[in-house]
Image (cartoon, rainbow, N blue to C red):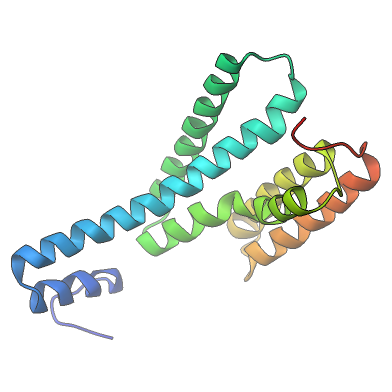
Length: 176
């Protein structure tokens, strides 16, 4: 779709809002749109940071106090926020940014979460290997190899890593 006065395709929605809604409602619409985008990115960062801290670092240091665990979760979210900031500077479009921030760490999460919640298969080794494989394969496929479907490949790699971690690791609950 092409519109006059629109340089990038991402501006079409805001241009339509300003033409058909008027300045007050277009401003409210723009604010709601930005809030939805920030909420999506925020949720992805909180999920990735919390799961990384809870499933990777805390099992390695189970003697941590509650205060230290809270600090670790917060630092993990900040770390993933810095990663997202670097990604935001790397990409030129909002669509690419949302796609990458949502896909970055969720490949492993898509595998780990249902298996951890609804089965007794796996353990800490399986969860850790799945999360790391998901992030690693996605980053390699999306940024270095430029695969056409890096997310699906990362989910498959995370599933394979979970299976390998289950076979090689001790079978114990992820959350002790």
